[in-house]
Length: 181
Image (cartoon, rainbow, N blue to C red):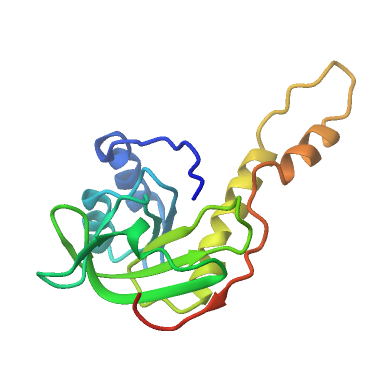
């Protein structure tokens, strides 16, 4: 299982931004946070729940899952075989257990692609994978709106086009298994 390096950002570092979002976002809208690894904090889950926001968080491979008082495992241990996905509902996560979350554990067919370990506020059908994949589209659109350094008078389009798919996972083909791992 190949793991890419990721950045961890402390909840304290972005809590103010979340509080600002509460003020700025229109009331009554369904908000769903789509977060990469490094953002799976108990504080974030509590904040989202307090504001009735949904969440889909990409968990680290060493995230602890509590099925009951006696059955505890890491995401890596629960990883399904290639081209499969497992779904678990109403489990607890992290060291100080956060109860009532749902999991999608998916392992793409390509050996160089890493598994997806998604923690969700809502029950997780196979559509959770497509929903979480929207995060990559959002990130791509954000990158496309940033300034691309180019030579004076040159066209920035080739730089944007070459970046569009660089490092972006391709659509995942996964055979599903509906049930707990």
